[in-house]
Length: 288
Image 1 (tube, rainbow, N blue to C red):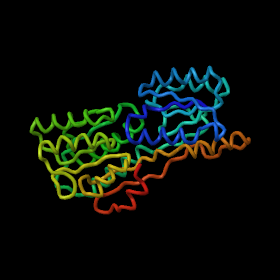
Image 2: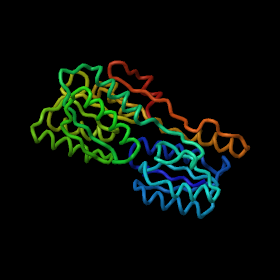
Image 3: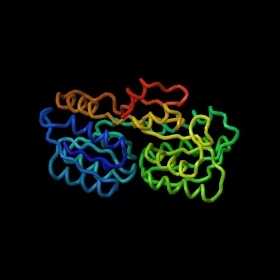
Image 4: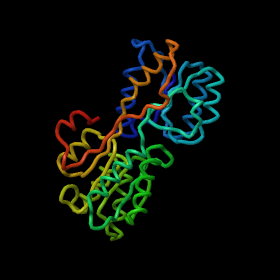
């Protein structure tokens, strides 16, 4: 098995995702697994080509970008290597991979922006901090916000990529504070960027969370982030489930037994957590 993933240090979500894969795909469980990591699509594609040349039976891919995979997936098919996507979707014909175990990033975004609409704020002036441009998470979560903002007449004060990085998100937020522009919502496409944005607010003594001046929204449900929601310092956190390895293992076992894969796409069940309703049990159950 050749496993291509994003950098485990990218986020708490990715650290948990990588640990889940390493725990499942072990010699004890009947696997000879090799891992390759990159946040760049071209480097991931090069790793995939190498795995195909090495003759792996299965190629597992969490793509850095949704585009550009057709040729290497066709090469895998020609070589008899079976491809299983995890975590993120790609723009490729379904015939080029066996199965896809993914989060519905657009649904995550829709759940979040619908929640925000239901808050009935007097006005919506939003700092939108994006992840790595072109990634499935960024594309889905951004599309949800863009469409809702246009439909509802919300103002996007700033929309900029921080590449999942807390310090970059802090700088973006600080730049808006320094500009003197009014804002009352921070929609950050992952928890680390939300944390960075909050650091800028704290440094400027701007209140946030429940009964604060700024609504804070993140994604991934890191345990520490859910604790921020529980404490009322954040308002919302959207779940992104990192635990896909058992689903992949089940598919591989079926293929090894000659069974047909009838469910091409498995979408992880995910929800959003609100500071007004979250419980300690939610933190303990869903925190990663």
